Image 1 (tube, rainbow, N blue to C red):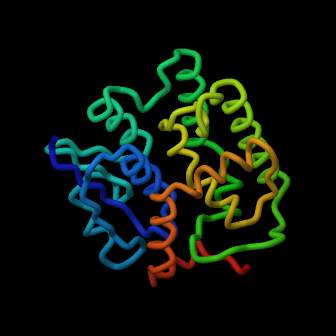
Image 2: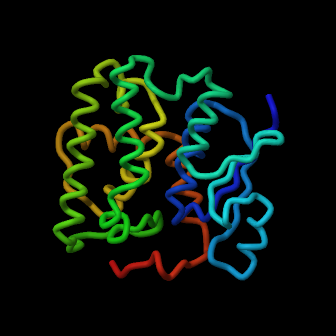
Amino acid sequence: MDNLTLIIGNKNYSSWSLRPWVFMRQNNIEFTEKRVALFTETTDEALSQYGSDSKVPVLKDGNVVVWDSLAILEHLSEKHLNSTGWPLDPEARAFARSISCEMHSSFSNMRNELPMNCRKEFHDRVLSSDAEREIDRIKSLWVQCRSQFGKDGEWLFGQYSIADAMFAPIALRFIGYNIPLTGEEKSYVNSVVNQPCIIEWIASGKAETEIIEEDEITP
């Protein structure tokens, strides 16, 4: 196997970095982690060599460079997991791709109002109606996935998939902001936050000392 290096940002804040990191750890794909602190005077210079427009995450796979979390996940599935990153069943696979792309491109109100922050816990945060609607949409997708496709395991489609990696940061947000959860949605979030690699990521995020003011909100 070619040497894999995953370039990530601050673990406390970088939800995009979490996705390929947790996917690789969950699937026992060995890699070297390179962390670049974001929004510092040296960030652009440190990331300039990768051609990613100074964004993380970036995967170096031998001579191949891949950026953008979903592109990285698909590359890992194709090259290192025999394309098993998506569900094998065609109907489930189509649904998994659809919700992953929706996660990639949507839910902007929820993202802005609930920035990922592993260090803090929030209670009774008042959200806009648009953010509330997006949260309800995510919950309904999780319930549909688990009831329709995930009966043979604890993940969205039974076995762990790219879709689970894409939604991992949302599970952390829901826990950190004490979003009310019931039934299948609560069970799914518990599966995510009890992953050993997720526990490790949270601990590392809490140990970081950098502050990114735009991602900080008052509890």
